[in-house]
Image (cartoon, rainbow, N blue to C red):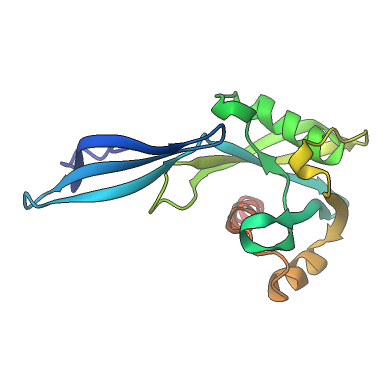
Length: 185
């Protein structure tokens, strides 16, 4: 999205869908640059998602699952979007994702910000929420999440997992940065 009042440095002059499934659309755009030269740009269209930081006892609840594209298990904050590329109210989606992945229900959700992820290939972004006043319940995970585990971690444990390369999710780390900025005023 372009909103600074300047002419965009690259504008779309044509587009074609090259791949589509229930989770994404991949398109190839023909573009024109400021100097009039033309080229192509590959774009992955995915719906925005939410990421929830479940806060409790000075630490967080995280989830761990096997991530097929990188071929290993990693920890992250609960996050997701609706199936079928459906649009969703971010706050409602945050309550839903938290409950589905962890079983936790939050009395309070605080919006910490909106960030883009992979902005070189996609317009997808995500809303970050801090969840507090947590009540336990049963998770209701999707089939892709059947191997998911959950654990409460102290902030020191979280930092150690980052240093060890066991938390590599950029969205989780960006959300943690938003949280710490929000806490420090």
